[in-house]
Length: 166
Image 1 (cartoon, rainbow, N blue to C red):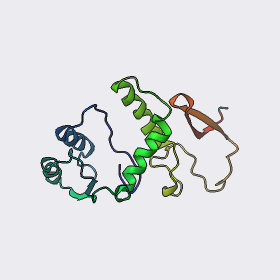
Image 2: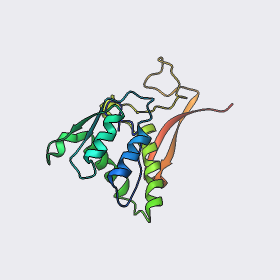
Image 3: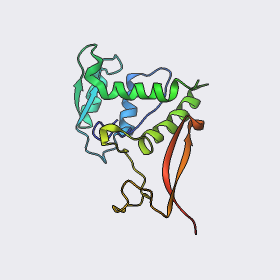
Image 4: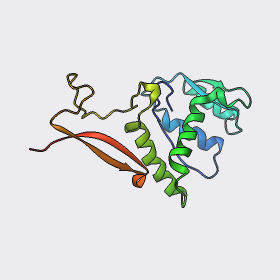
């Protein structure tokens, strides 16, 4: 997750994560298009010296959290808690593929439809088709209606504007 904009850049699922698997996930997430400078991680065994050296080769500065304070990586803790509270507490994944598909849909909702108070409230990837007229700010434009789109089978909803078809 990018801390500044709350954008989830990459996710994946495995039953047994290893340092090699984790390094491959970082290679997929950090393509070189974005100038990332820092990576914050805890002191789990997965984050080995080899993994850290592989990340340093990618131009990242590694910041390790202190031992056992969950507040040190509050952004990650909040994201994991949100995934649990908003998604996995209500669904029972049948297998790894089912969990991946569920998380894919939730991550899309998190990035494109769920408001984030820390962003003012904003959305990490707002839709491009929103009307940009400043005259109606807090009102629905007369040529639009509010539509609800169910997410995860109706567990969540995203609301947006839709233009009337004449």
